[in-house]
Length: 406
Length: 81
Image (cartoon, rainbow over all chains, first blue to last red; front, side):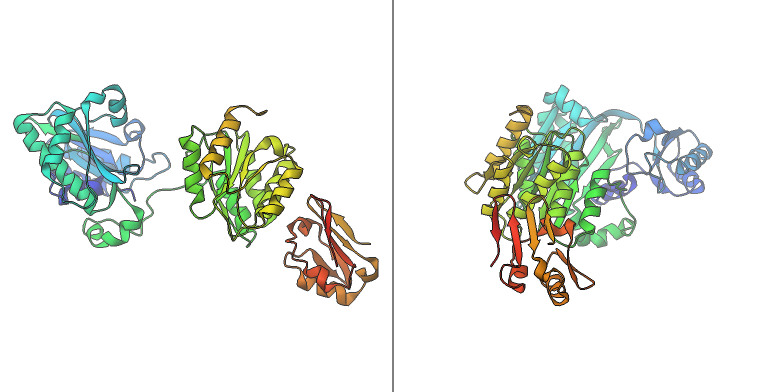
């Protein structure tokens, strides 16, 4: 669950991290009142869950409360990237001496939270990490043990730029952010920029928080306290044609289950995969061996031939897909021969040679002897449990990268 | 003789039972993937479902010996009794 900027600000504030005075407004009048309370020049920011606000005109500067009201009224009517704002955030135009970056995120590979700090804040941290790796400090945290301040201090010090009193002042901010990340099950808790003001104090000027979806129920009380409307849809998700078509095929036939996702996938190897965690494992196995999956899929529960064929055809229709890998873990409730018929039929209907199109077929389990016979007739080699999922994925990657004839 | 060859599966129903209303009803009832339909008392093979055959042999058992044959076109063998 992704939070709006104003919600993230409240979360950060609740965690004891200093923030500048700010106001959330749903009308121009409320924005004027907030700007009057803050005093001095302000920044009016659209509250949408999408990037590119500045470029789209969703961030404006105001010298007076009246100007803040006028800007807020304009911004509240402005759609950005298909999103209408839920309000505006009114911030003071702070006099900043230096901007830093602080974040704690869930490192899925290490299965532990990781702290990040940089003395080059306010810009894209990934770019900083690439261009100036010596300006980024990193450090993992325990999932169980209390989070000590000295770990935060080490990470800040490793980024360079802060020493002495400044280092001492910044340390509790990163440590608090780390506790916030763990206490609230955040997959990302980011402050960017963390500003050092002329008096030497640090304040969070902007924050970005994302909570693990499954944890939302556990934190209802605190979410309600900070004004999060739990029944409000967060992110608009527009399914792709591939996703829509796969769902329609699945809905039309009660036998078995197929699912397909392709948001964020740009690759040449189509995946027809499934079985008890097999899809995730196999997608990772393909990627780990340098392959580029064109999609994610799940197939199981003994689908019909038509359903298997439908999924395979949708995968094969995707731009750039040269071959498909048909792979599952070990199946007991899905028949190998039925899936084999489906994927072969898909190739034939699309005028493609199954032997050239199916990079690998690795589904050990029920009716595998029959499946092997079907595949054999069309020149596709059957891989049973003697070939691991890793090996099957590697074979598929090698075939697709080796060219159509391999 | 009703006979259909799809890609993977072929079905043959002998002429002697093809017009039998009781057999048409029985075959429609037993097939789990709707390969047979009772068309006004005659056995009809539903083309689009032939390749869905799960090789359960219920149709073969429901019909008199030798009157329904399921052909596995991918290996040239037949299921019958």
